[in-house]
Every structure is written in C-alpha cells, then in structure tokens.
Image (cartoon, rainbow, N blue to C red; front, side):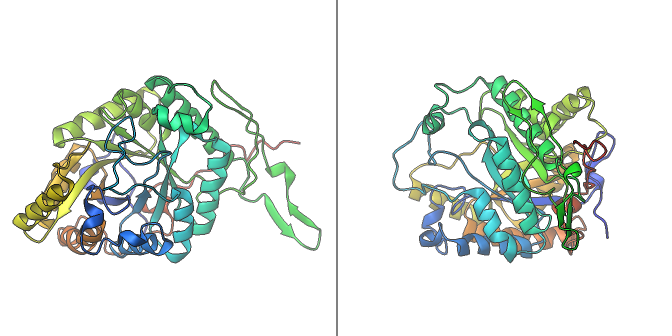
Length: 407
C-alpha cells in the first residue's frame, strides 16, 4: 500500500505513521562504546561491520540509516583535535560505505553525510545519483556545513571559515546545483537502440547554467537521472552546534526534504518546528512536504535500572559523564515509546535515534522499541514502498528541464 504523505503546515503529524531512522557512527555515540562487549572494535573499518548494522536496521523496518562523516578526526573538543587515543578515531567514507552496503539490502534508505563546505556539488551529485542507481531508488543525502579551521586547512582553499550565514547560503547553493544536475537528464534520455546505433538522445540532456555567488556550473551531469528523480536531501539544525541555529533552520526550511533538529524536550521541538515552518511559509514553500525528525541519543534496556547502570559504567570507563547536543534518553522500550508519542504532537513526523552503544542499542531499537510501537499501532509491520521517497510519502518529481531541450 502507498505510504502516507508527510506532514505539511496543514497536516497533523500525530495522525500520520511514525517514521524512524538511526544514525550510524562508529561503535556508538558514547565515547566508551567501543569497549563494550560485542562492539567489534577490530572490525570498525570493514564492510561487514557496516553491512551487519544496516541489516539489523532493515530487519527493524526502519525508514533509513544515516552514515556520519566529517573531514577531520573525531574530537571531544568542538573546535580542535583533542589528541586522545582512548576513543574511536577515524571513519570510512560515508558515500562509499553506503554504496558497498546497498546491494546487500532491499528496502531501507541509505543516507550518507557529505560536507558541502569543502566539496564540489558536481562530484556529490553524481556520487549520490550513482548510489540511487546501485540501491534502486533508496539513496538520500545529509548535507553538513563545516566551520572548523582545521578542516579548511586540509584543503588549503580558505584561510578562515565562512561566517554562519554565508556558510549556510553556500550550502543552499550547493544543494540547488545538485538538484538541477539530477534533473539535467530526462528520464527517457537513454535510448540504447543497438539497431540505429543511438544510445542517448542529446536533446534530452540539459545545461543547468547555474550562476551564483559560490558556484558557476553549466552541466549537464554525466550520470543519468536517478531512479527517484530526486534522492532525498536532508540537513541538521542543532542549537549551539555551529553558532547560529537560525541559519541551519533556514537551510532546512528552504532546501531539504528532511530536517533533523536537536532539542531537549517537547516544548523545544514545538518551538523549532514552528520556526522552520514559518521560514518555509515565508519562502512560499508551505505546500511542499517537509519531514522534521528530532535527534535523540538512546540507552535502552528491558528495565530502567539496567539502562542507568550501563550508562554509568560507560561514563566510568570514559572518566566523564556523557553529554550530547541532543536529549539523552535512558530507560525502557515502553518509556521511550511514551516519549516519542508525546514529542510527535509537537509537529514531528519522526525521530533519528542515535544508539549510545551500537552493539546493544541498535538491536534494542529494532527488537524492543519497534515491537512496542507496533503494538500501539503507530509503526509499520512491513515496508510499504520500494524507494526512500516512497517510504516517506514523497512523490517522484518531474524533471524541471524535460520540456526545454537544448541543441
């Protein structure tokens, strides 16, 4: 059956099915996660580790997974390397990891993180289009903005980071170029007619002729239009993470299909949703669907004391109490289900859960939380669509250039 449409300004999120995603990041969000039983630290940089994690998420019928990534080593400091050797350092490339996992999965969406600040939109456009082809329509993109001087130094192109507003303006242009390049091939541009010797109809490839402050891109892409037409674009907005949360909210409101918000409670979620919807309406986009997911770090167990004890043990190993830019939930499956149902009344359509310890908390989500939500009638019992856009209730868009061929 078709997926229900995502909430808009006139649709109540509380009456729509609940959407769930999981953020995959190393051994888990807690810095001592790699030291837990079952964490498999020796396999963190193998394809099998990531394939197993995504397979678990798919077994739990989750909408999608995001793959965290950045252009510098992880650090406990917000703006500099910490030099620590007792925590996980290093990552595989998110896009390449998603592409490796794609043939091993069938339904779940795959959303790698890319840093718009130091990458070219042409490269990202064809990489995500390729992922969409490899996954047969399950690709997404999480756009990240960097304002760290140490990341800039890796590329040598900029002496200092851009101001908040300009960084997000550049990211918006980055997304616009990517979207236009995805549309630069018509759906039927490939003829593949051996008899006539025509593989492609040149009139169905289009120049995008983008001219902006940050990019000048003519196009067309070298990769045929993705199966979804437009893979799902997402971005995060976290108060205090990059300084000006309003700039992050503006990017979500004007340029994405899915936004992740880091808030502490239902009232914070309500305020963030209202602000993003206000900006979207002022941009003339209120009628277009937008999913808003709250980010939430979770430590789950069958009983609350066990969850508390496990988190305390992890804190002791790390020699500091765990903190996060998101709310942190520690408790049972039923307690978390209560919280999700309460928060979604703020206008959220879903949640992106960050497992404190991937080896423990991802199975707790798929085998504990999901059945609890199913019993309450608020989560799917089977995948309803073959594409990520379909799972999120997003229609496949028509290419913007299809009626305007070039010579």
